[in-house]
Image (cartoon, rainbow, N blue to C red; front, side):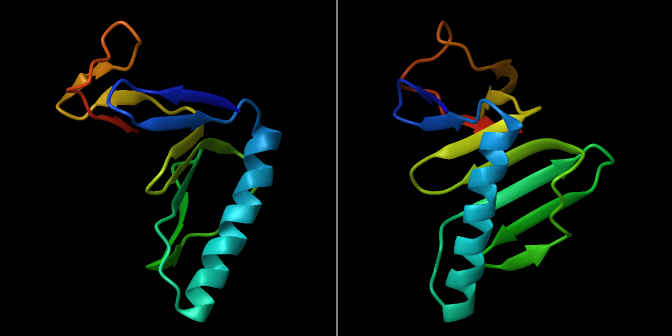
Length: 115
């Protein structure tokens, strides 16, 4: 896993392979389901985008869609500490969506998001 820390302190972890991502995603799903079952709050939100335009999402609010291990276009897991990503995901400036992340245009005043 590659770790990218912005100058403002945000942390993005980039899965380097589909296999690595799916291994972690299985644990994330199990953890969120268990937290929901026992009524524990969780700050995790997992979003899986599929090539056909459908998606799967799980958070403390519940589950939406069906998780499938095939035809995945992008995976995003967000929590209070980090954002983990794989696939067709871009990091952009939240105040200027046309500005994509790079070390050259990063500074402490910028907040980055993913899509």
